[in-house]
Image 1: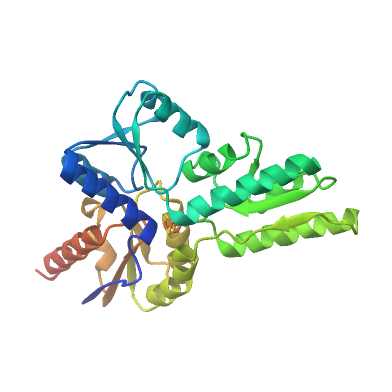
Image 2: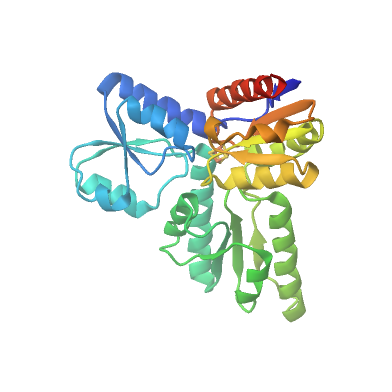
Amino acid sequence: MKIQIDEHSGFCFGVVNAINAAEKELASHGHLFCLGDIVHNNEEVSRLKKMGMDIIDHSQLASLHQQRILIRAHGEPPLTYQLAQQNNNFIIDATCPVVLKLQKNVQKGYCEMQKKQGQVVIFGKKGHAEVIGLVGQTNDSAIVISSIEEVKKLNFDIPMRLYAQTTQSLQTYKEIVQAIENQYKERTDNVDFVWYDTICRQVSNREESLKIFAQAHDVIIFVSGAKSSNGMILYEICKSVNKNSYLVSSVDKIDKNWFTNMESVGVCGATSTPLWLMESVAKQIEIEINNIKK
Ligand code: SF4
């Protein structure tokens, strides 16, 4: 039985940056508060907790004074910075540069739309930390849509600037853009609609290589935390080309029955999945397979 780990899976550079920043802080100060899970992966979060990191939520942030607080790769709305600074906390800002650039673009679009009485629209997952950070750039006025069905609730009589959460599917985003363009063109020739391709290629570039990887194996074990947006998108891609694809968050979720009469297993994961976890999963699969043989 062949077991292979996908060389393109694992942390993206945004997550690597955030984890490096946390490890550096923990090495020099021994303790660190992180606002929200540093990465949507419980196993990696527990590893850093053992090193001295405490995860806090926004309600706890208000009561912290003169502490060191890490902002994760997803970024935060301006209000979070104000709140942390007014209590003299020190911020270690690990917002991914790709997200930071998107936040600035959304802010610019918001100023433009204010002058033109238009709307800012974000294609993303409602309630996701990155989306909250983006909506915060617009004084909470941006409209969030999560699917093509929601396009109909937009106003096509006023201008629009459209952005996407970095980890959304590029294909769905393009379909949404097309649907919006069609709606405008039905109403007027003088369309003031601009959309921006803000999808991070760290995720979308993985889609094609992941399809090839998933097709090349009898069974696919996709390792991801359930809260990872790109994890769910990439897992669905595996399933679309290989029906023997299974989602696991940790080694204890592996079922030996998945490997009966199979000859090759592929292990892959999201941009939030650490390599060490995929390696542990691969080792556990080997143990399960050896148990089947006995
Ligand atoms: S997926 Fe892209 S935008 Fe998101 S943290 Fe990783 S590198 Fe940054």
